[in-house]
Image (cartoon, rainbow, N blue to C red; front, side, top):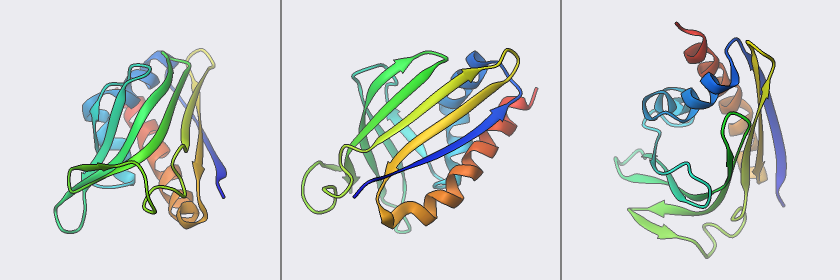
Length: 151
């Protein structure tokens, strides 16, 4: 059974800057290192496009998540729907490895407060990842805030 977790943080920067910083290749790697030090993405942030969220596992093999961009309203809202995993470079989109969470959403709302932006993240997850996310998401958002606020 999926649970929805919500995290939010206010950043001292305009929404356009926060949105661009969150999705730019180099800064994406920096803030998502909270989840995996080798965190990266391959693909496009355009609505309807496939995107891979990848990193190296303990054995040095590339693994990650297969998703599609469900919505992208620049500087306002981004919705990602996860539907599979990458295992040794192969997409796995059905079976026991994905059935408990396939279809999970990761949604970002950017609330424009002028020179500040509140980033709200809603994540669908199963019990197995709650403790991990409770530590990783606040850390990731704190890293995003630091990157966005550094001149």
